Length: 263
Image 1 (spheres, one colour):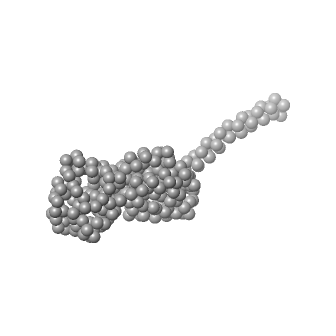
Image 2 (cartoon, rainbow, N blue to C red):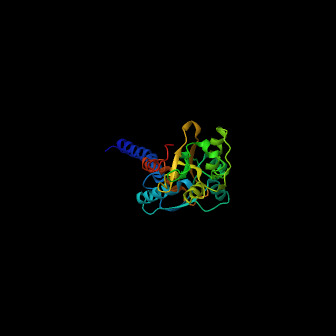
Image 3 (cartoon, rainbow, N blue to C red):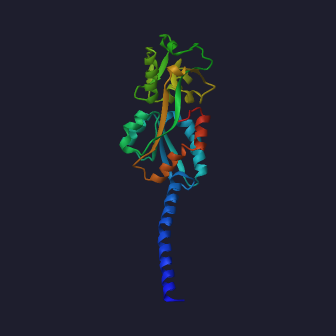
């Protein structure tokens, strides 16, 4: 073979090798993306701070996530959203946070990644089983003979409650103001209150102990649940993968079966 053709073949080999390098790099990038959103998510023990109203559904969702991602453990810490925000600001060791309103999430913006709304919810009037006080609407809650319990105004469900009552120009004097929605529900379950305002999904967790009186959409408030990884997380990729998973069809099915609305 002539020197001319030998030189041409060597040049072609060099060019081909050079072209393959960026293609290989691109493939690595795709693999990295899969790690943060697919079944190849990095293994880790995650701590997720979540709003109280997500207690039951997230326990179920966490079990499904762990089954789909062997080697990963999801630990939840449930509390009122305002308490979760305080924990984040204080640097509590955690990996992700899910609040029951966008206002609380906005308040910790410097500490979180990009939030994504994963679900929505609405309020109902929760009453004792069988509705013994015959409460039919928001106006009934103004009856001074009733023991009504609400969440504190610092809590998302408390703010939503104030919003719907103020919009109807109704004044309700609660016998107590609770730190989270589950505490409101508990008061009614135990018969310590005749009625309260909670999320629809919370009332649904105690069907044998309480009833729910629907509030018309025109008088109601829509609660949005944003989720975000924490910048201080020691497992950033795994935290992001879990937050991304909450928007997948499987996770959305679990949320909607529990009564949450589409984001």
